[in-house]
Length: 503
Image 1 (cartoon, rainbow, N blue to C red):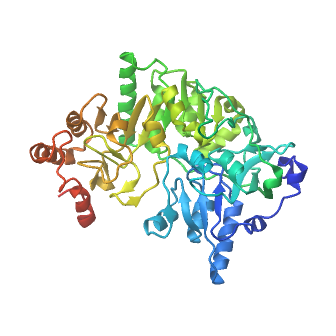
Image 2 (image 1 turned 120 degrees about the vertical axis):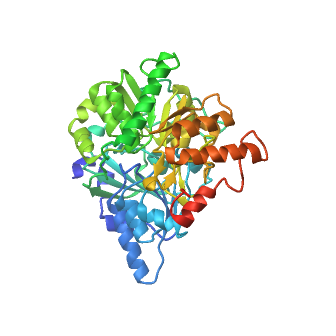
Image 3 (image 1 turned 90 degrees about the vertical axis):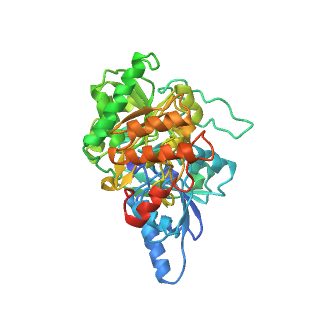
């Protein structure tokens, strides 16, 4: 396994995961690699979780603050949350055990725009970073580090941390070497300069991380796969949503508002997003590009078909079958995929400059176009805002999509007023459900409300929304955005009391 470690000094620091975890003390802040289940450390967090359990059994506390790129895997978030070893988590979480602790008030959670994490770390607003635990796929003879299947915030963690622990994972494909584009030109105001990217396939960085070998206190060798979860086969709802979006793209091309090969695609993670990407296989668009956070199955299929020329992202988010395919055919894909730090993949300036087509999911939207993408019934965090805000506010087109109902029809995804606002109406241009697509561009609030109700609401809830809106027009304090304050969240309250938004 030491063939992955070509630097003699770092090869001499190879040790066990248990020894590496022993360097992490109570209340330390630890920056971990990982983004959507890719490229996260597997051995050291597990060893740390076992140590936390042992310390607790001995009557001693050991809890840490955990920073990552985004979500990780069960060996990291799951293991540490199960051991009650996380006192604060940022910037994104999707682990169910951690989610339960957050919603019980047992773990603090800072849900952040993903593009803002690295700048805030450099600005000092998040406090010092004690240790970075970073998975890499290899170490070069000069001590530079070959990134693995995600980049995330790793560059910043390596630069900012007082000490570094490396996991060298031989499961990661050695052909990843050269796929990454790590930019070292960032600076704090007033010394910031324009980022030299004008096309999605521009490279303006280097293929590896820089790290002072003297900062590295331990190197752990692993051979462990990323967490790759299967995507469900698209159901009728997902296919209908995908169909509406693709027809909308065709319409925009016909009107001359989009070029024939579209603009760089950005897609959130999930079955519906994957269905949209799959639908593009049969759509009349070629020579497409992607500038997005993650590369998932549908995008890999588009690359293989030749319809997608290239994809820029910060991580893979693939099913087991797709991950196996990528590993087997890495030579075919490696020159058409670029992995960048998330402060670049999600950078608002670059998203605006490139004119990305942003497609993201939501929990609920209200009739005026405000979107809640994070909280159930206003107070229970589901996952987090992720990068949707980075893209939505700055995209050429900002599209949000969801089934019109949830919980077997007991919850309407279109409501009089969202119970939590992540994306204000000014950042939401298009809302899509299986019922239809509402193009909200250029519409004042009352026109938006009429369109969202008619195009996006489920028939079981449509008349209820019409009734609410009609009464709001008569009884609202003002008529710019008609609202009945005493009723705006009544649907949510009814669900909490009866288990259904329906009367």
